[in-house]
Length: 251
Image 1 (cartoon, rainbow, N blue to C red):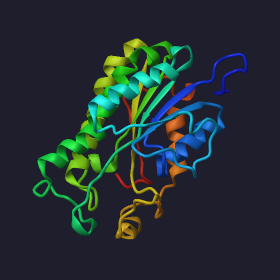
Image 2 (image 1 turned 180 degrees about the vertical axis):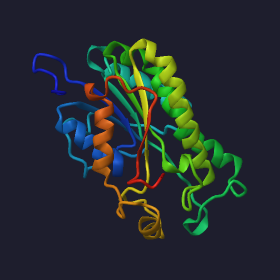
Image 3 (image 1 turned 120 degrees about the horizontal axis):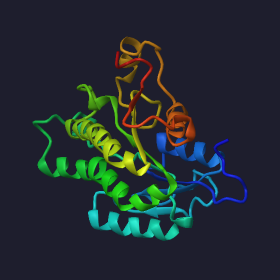
Image 4 (image 1 turned 60 degrees about the horizontal axis):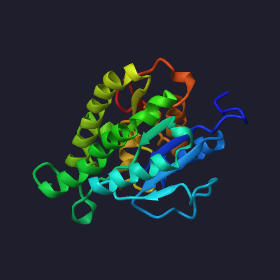
């Protein structure tokens, strides 16, 4: 059983980027298992995402702003029961596009865009993990970084800044696994491929038909289930892994 006994405090999850897609599915998966879910997003609490304590446990913060991120960490610390955080899922990410929703190449991406993308996709995850280190340590918690198939190959839709930030996050996952492991904190990554969300680009059907052996998109819940496993005792000896969730697209 992964749900705590009634006389114990509920397990707590901090999830960034919870308002849609994989994040929303992850909230539902953990909430259904009895976890307390604290969410961080630059958007207000989404009214179409009903879960217990949702509005009360939502922190609106722009993770691209280091000062605001630090303030959010302080607020999270104050909210946590028994100073324990059992799971941190770094899911928030941005992927800017050029005019006409076209892919931004390494030539076309401005330095300001590189900087903005890396602040959200790369620096925020390590800031949150380090800022909440004692709470994760107290719970023998788990960190899951959401990378991408675009971090290991040039993708027709994902821009250069997004792709390189995800590659950097995969490398950071290994470094964190080595550093946090001795504290009893496991750090892993999941690398989704083409998942059926609202942000799919035109042309995705070509990838499904010709590059994915299973010939279908993944669902957000299929990703959320793996995130859940990585945050529970089922994966108690998994550390420093990056799990591909893409129907075989990477082979």
